[in-house]
Image (cartoon, rainbow, N blue to C red):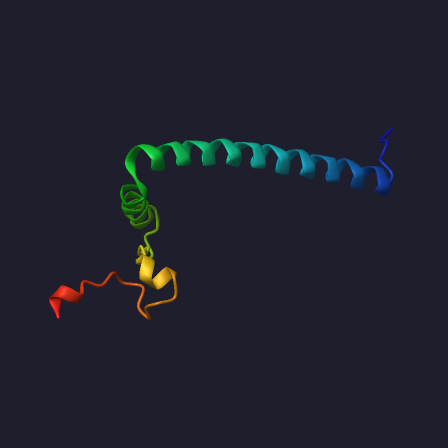
Length: 91
């Protein structure tokens, strides 16, 4: 004899399983973020982003690349139109 769960109980069970999996992923992500923060503090943002770009190229054979830049403080304050750092001595 096979006993089957009523649809409502099955839905509640599935929902509980999904919530548990999401909670576990969120917890794991939180620990990974703490590790990443420690790495940034130890090695610096530029080193981490450079390595991230290299890892992306290794694991994605489709030829895509990670492009990143560190905008100048003048750009971030809205006083300059280009995000690239500028040295006015060059001109």
